[in-house]
Image (cartoon, rainbow, N blue to C red; front, side):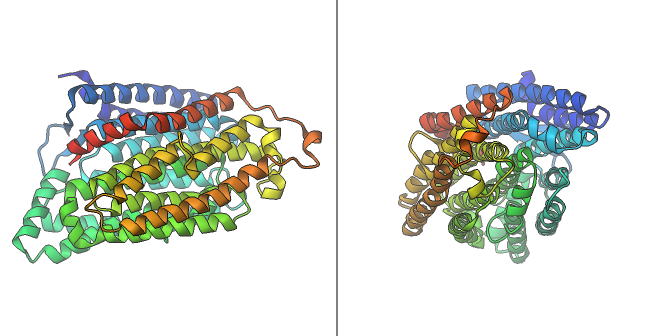
Length: 498
């Protein structure tokens, strides 16, 4: 048996141990420890991805060799390992690119706690990606929630405490629904591992058992609970304050990674536990589709009305989460593939935008409103170029990741079995127009000189910020140019996913 077979479980353990050990180090030691461990984790994830691509199979890793229904299990294939690698690389890049903000905005005595929470967050995300056990998934959902709340409020200035409180209230409502749903599901199936649970669910549906009604209730509670936690409209009122008030790397991590962990766990629940053929009977995917389309429009309209650049990007995230749920709500494989690709696309682009927006703000004497940001792209050329690339990707300009996402959603909408073709295409068109309005308005603003531009002069940024910006731009372009092989890997992985 190849040693690579153990890597997914080890990445979770290493990330957790790194977080625990960070509490014993001071700020510099914690930073070096976490970045070193993240690099090792990413190399292990890369090895696991190459292993799965070569074999073309998925694997189950039984913890302690204890069988169902008591055992715990990890399952990994190409989709899981690719997403794990992406999450690990993105978090490490965000921490490196946002290091100047961490040093400047987090107290020296608390910087080790920041890296502690970042490592525990990575551990929870990896667990949500790999776990094949529903209760283990719930445990790491809670770890994800707590660490995300800490990342929001650690700056301790402005509205961060209130923002963290609003986030925790909404998130704990989602957690409560998720836990109650899992309790009911376990009560009627007697299983927590996904495959045995799926077999029990199929038996209940096919036999017309009296347990069918509580099972539908459980499906609804779990689905809505994860929708709340991932900030699907209208459960997204906490997003602008949380993303807008937290420090730049925290906002980038929250927007690009945290919600994606919940969404991927939901995808596994729908595909592996219930099955899309059966979940259609619960009409949960209809809820996904309706709320997803509503979020696409409502989030974009709110972004247009916003004058604070960070809050504008936050509202844009609400719209982009709507895209993902619209794809899941299509109820077809093409829609799920589009949604999974958009998880990658949105995560890479949104991290780019939040880090660039903070640098633009720094170049404007910490101003964040559009009048204050006039000429910011000329004062900080790397940040201006980075933000422009991210904005064009969100709009859907060809050769960038956002264009491929929208193309995949449009292709899925034209599938013969698609019931919402017209609605999907109209929603895509309206959302794209709205994206153009608020993103290009921002790009024009930061490149419009003001009377203070020549007095301020250009701002020099840390070399690490510049390198990270270049890497993220290359990733975005690569997802646009190399879309066909990436989508093919996702499609092949979906065949092994169920």
